[in-house]
Amino acid sequence: MKKLLAILLMAAMLLSTLSLVGCNIDLSLDETEAPEGEGTVAGNKYEVDESLTYDGSEVTIKFYHTMGANLRTVLENYIVEFNKLYPNIHIEHEQVGGYDDVRDQISTEITVGAQPHIAYCYPDHVALYNLAKAVVTLDSLIDSTAEVKRADGTTETLGLTADQKADFIEGYYNEGKQFGDGLMYTLPLSKSTEVLYYNKTFFEANNLQVPKTWDELEAVCAAIKEIDEKSIPLGYDSEANWFITMCEQYGSPYTAAKGDHFLFDNDQNKAFIKEFNEWYNKGYITTQTLYGSYTSGLFVAQDDTKSYMSIGSSAGATHQRPTADADGNYPFEVGIATIPQVDASNPKVISQGPSLCIFDKENDQEVLASWLFVKFLTTNVEFQAEFSMASGYVPVIKSVGENEVYKDFIANADGGNHISALSAKVCLEQADAYYTSPAFNGSSTARDEVGALLTKCLTIFGDDVDAQIDKAFEEAVKKCMYS
Image 1 (tube, one colour):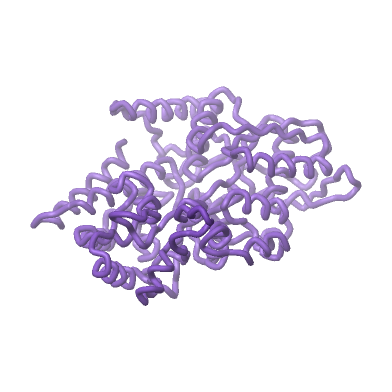
Image 2: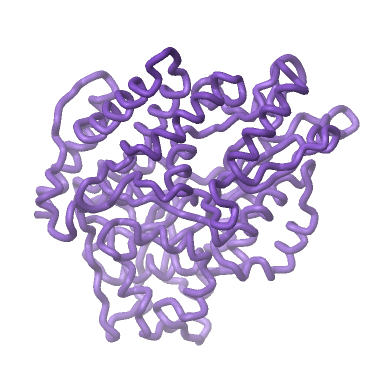
């Protein structure tokens, strides 16, 4: 079965490549044949008993990621620290390229059993790897109470302690269980979300209040348009995130890991799309696709058309800051807030950023060693603090907030030289609001299609807007089902 699934995985990757050049061949796996769960492709349920633990064996662990030079330096420093505890676990890490490059290379390597031991991943990547049952579940490892001997004479529990589990930000941790079978496939490494950047100088000069709800945002957009008629008050970078977030905030269906996957064709979702269509036609909003580039470019503009609000990644804060003059002064101060909500008392914001998955290997010692390294990176306070400060992503464990270096980093937060710290501060303040969407083979297609759907519907005009929106939703679902 595993060999058959590997062949089907290669076919799925071939289909992905062919689709880029207009081919329309259906090589998809019939998910009704999945061995576990209803409509979901199960991974490799990995079990360890209390007699199995890392025994000090000499092993080499391959780790694929996307880290640039500055982050590789942080990683390498902490590999040294890890090797003080486990000198026989040799970590070979490689920057493969971007996230999709990691996915594509691993998908090819899985077919011949040459996948790495650990990799950066997003949920839809894991769903793809699960076609070949290549990713091990982590539940048995997390719950193990077996003891592991370290080189310094100390011991640690193989699994996570109760305190370590509780230390994870819940929304980040729960992302690892979004695969339809209730099992854990990933641990979070570093995360980002979306935040609202706003021109604080302009807002204060014009007595504008930062919007907490979408109704308030509409009113602010109208007020800005009266002040600066040429402006496009709000730029939103990710159309897909916007659609999915609105589903989450309204509590309306988007997708499901089991059964009928594609649920977004419903009246509530059509209603908010129609409202945004009206906003677009009033000149209130634009998106990355419609603008032709990241909307941060519109936000930091000083001449001609500009925006005064921008919703984008918390990890991209420095791109939302205007260029300083020769004296180091910025044209305006940037404020950062949580994104608007349908219900401000029940906020929902998307969880993004890389997690770590572990791949199946013949040698249990390699899997156990991989787990120890993943556990080290995700629970080590100092690593999480330094990685966050170097990357612009936020830590995944709460105790980083008590780290003195990180506390100083946050204490200096402002909308100028320390804008990344301000972004991280906002992210940490909304830790209870994070959500993730179900992951399944096809979830990335759904994401692409709803992003394209929102873009298309914004530009609809005429007397039959409702009919055009109905047709666009119907076509998007069909593309998800048959692409």
